[in-house]
Length: 296
Image 1 (cartoon, helix red, strand yellow):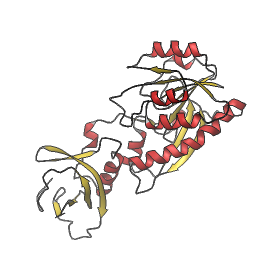
Image 2: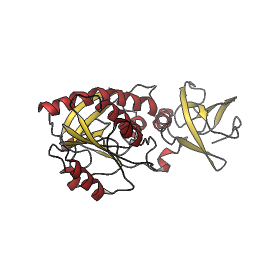
Image 3: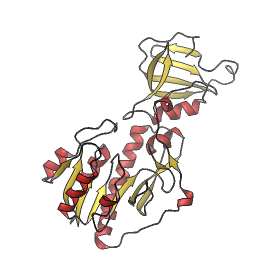
Image 4: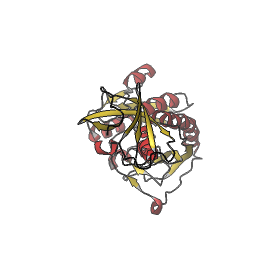
């Protein structure tokens, strides 16, 4: 089975390495980028393609006509698109007889759309999923090929969940690739009535409002931890990154204390009252430590 592989993030890199070990899966072309301003987990596949002796097309912007022409010249049976910032147009979707397989780290048909790892953590979900599907002209709406549930633990941050999803996906890829070659793969239609779409997040979504509950702040911080941009708060008019917090038990002694008040400062550790409960900041970028009893 001849494949063209499209991707430009860390997951793409791991998936391409995995796919290159699958017997009779002939990768005839790789499409990637040399740089990206939108992918925090960006990883060019150019060097890996060169090491494997695979022809590589470097794309700048959304050059779909160029991509389409190049794919047609390679005559693949199928296309794998894992980690790409643009929806593929109809011409590309129809350029291989077996179609295009995409990837979405969520429990489709639920939670289609943008930033699935961040939203799953920010919303405090207990489970997500690693889902491969046949791409259509919609967003994450095609028939499911392979899906596995991934449990989200309370101590998972973005990096840990990302790694869990990669490890799960690397088990799935050889499985469904061999099934596709044998013609034994599944095509499970999504129930569109159960679907929802997560929106694109913006900078304001990452701002900590101390009126939020402690659990909500905890989830926001872990959702935006590395490799993402980090949650932030404002102190003396300056944006300060907050990378890790812990929930702390303050009992009933502080029920009459306003949200945002600094309860304790111990070296680089800061305890802060929230709208409900309190949190302890243990990894941050405060250049000037706040004083106890001041307000953030």
